Image (tube, rainbow, N blue to C red; front, top):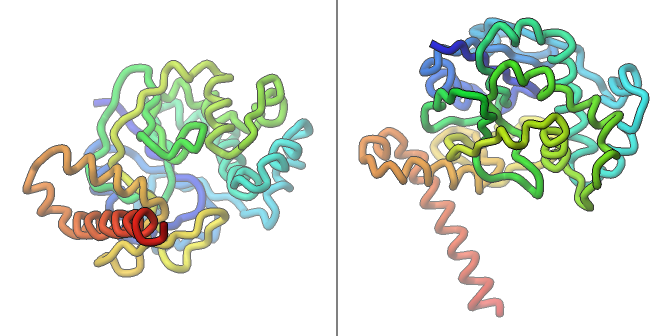
Length: 287
């Protein structure tokens, strides 16, 4: 069987209920090993910490630009200042730096595996993660924001060093290309994949997970507004992700699947009703 390594990078958001779905739908079906890459202040009693094979912990920066000052000397500041209102400045700068930390310190471990799943702590799965094969990079559909969704990817480990090398791209190569007017995390990610010649390898799979947050989770960008009812304090961060994920389940037309995920389906129909009512009010009442 192919050897998978799931790398969860960033802040450990989403909470225990979210993390249980990672084991149920990703780690167990794929028999994947787990690496967590996060700050040293992670809760050592958490299920992810206890069950992770690799604990790649780092000291958090109060200002992550200090990391770039210590490691890079090119265009990085100009790039992030260009995206000061898009999430690139305050969120992307951290995500990209963590990729650099992984590349510089743990690439030899990563190369021991056949496939890498590079993802986030806050992904709530409602279906088993497919075990893709071949030389493609698999990225869930949707959430592109004029670029490429950067929250989750599965790829052969032979691509890992280039895939993780986004900071060097920002620092020295990005201005070799036309810079889009709206320079956000997703746009930079797509530019980087194109630069390293992997755009042709990208395949889009149907979405089977969505991003969650607990009430007190720290966020550098999007604040969640929609409750995931019956899950005790979890919120849906990006409603479109949630809708696409449930649509994937519905396409199976399997009553057992619906029964297994009844709480998810109740939230789906509630959210859809809010969307339809909102459109009706805008189109027919507020006109």
